Image (cartoon, rainbow, N blue to C red):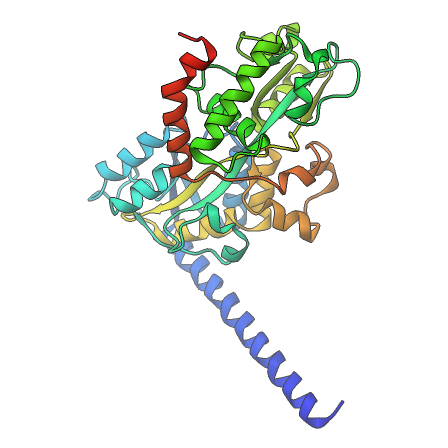
Length: 365
């Protein structure tokens, strides 16, 4: 190694070390400021949803900051209203952070209700699941999955939407409900469209309805809604829903009946929730520290323990940091890597098609 090469290498290492030191100091300063505030106020985080009970306890144990939990069973709209109602309130009724459905992120940004903050793991959050300016960012998502009752489907489980056209699945396939009123059913139709070559948006809905129409004509579609009870009874032995619902159903059924959980290989679609910090947060540093915790490997694993796929899932799989026992509870990771996150515009266009054509094409009221 020449002196010139050694000098260049030493300089490079010094630059990296300085950057790492500055970054560590920044996080240390943030932690100190958050501890000085002494509290974080959350809203709409039920402990049995996405492992949030353990996530909250993990944050408290790590930083010693009190977590004031508002209305755990509230919905996304309630969270937005809570920010609006407490703009001038620095008391315990003002939420610092929100966890809402995708559509609420851009809307809250447009109304000036949230503030930007880019976590240190920002680059590993997919671009199509975050606001480029950092106002909101995907936190976890569900992927559309099939539950297969192995008491009824005794040979190999289907692995794709294409498989479900086989006559051996006569009177077996169900969706959760009416896609005109239920999001999981709407996105099932969307995924069916992707599986049949559609690009997305309105085309996905049109192709998905065509697929459903053919499935109904063949006798494979069950017109009873897919549910845990109907699944267990064998009425809807192949049913669709978000993976976190199906995996939780698998655990609650306890092997009666035995079941497979499958991510269809030809139409992998994800529905994402997003995090944001209130523009009026009484504890802005605690809010930022909360985001750092949620988007760290530790926080992401907390959500995964509750069967909600953390937004950094693919990055963590690639780095091999997800425990084997946790991965063993999930369907194989290969298909998760194919997940498509439809934009709000694409979802809106698809919903319009379903609203306009579902009844006519499917003979539904």
